[in-house]
Image (cartoon, rainbow, N blue to C red; front, side, top):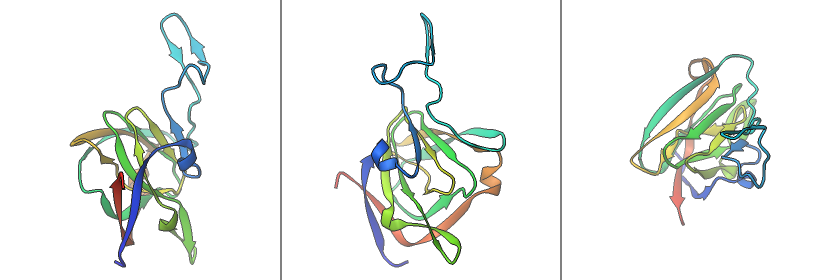
Length: 170
C-alpha cells in the first residue's frame, strides 16, 4: 500500500453525485406535482429509473459502525444498484471508473465520501466504485436492490494502492 487518501465527508447532493447515478428523496410538494393523488395519498412516480435486463433482487443489509476507512472498493460492472437509508444516515466512498490496459480501476483522484441521509436513495450507475455503507449510529439497515444474482455474478472487489480515510467535518 502506497499511503493514504483522505476524503472530507460531504452531504449527498445532485451536484456532487453527478456522474455517479441518481438520487431519490421524499418530494417536496412545492417542487414536484404528484403522479397520482386522492384525499388519502400522493404518489410520486418516476423518481428514479434502473435499467436492468432481468428481475431486480431486493434485500436488506445491516451494518455496524466502524472506522471510516477502507483498503478496498467494489464494483458491479454491468448492473446498477440502489441503496436506501432505512433507519439512519450512512457514509459511503464512491469513485468513477478509470482504465489501465483495458482493466477497470477506481479513480481515487476523483473519489468522494458522501453522507446519505435517512430516507434518501442513491442509484449507482453500472461500474461505479463504492464500498459498503458506514453507518453514523451503532447499527443501521440499508435496503439494497440490483439485478438478480449480482452479488454472485457481477461483483469485483479491488484492493487499493492507498487506504481511503474519510473525515467528518475536517
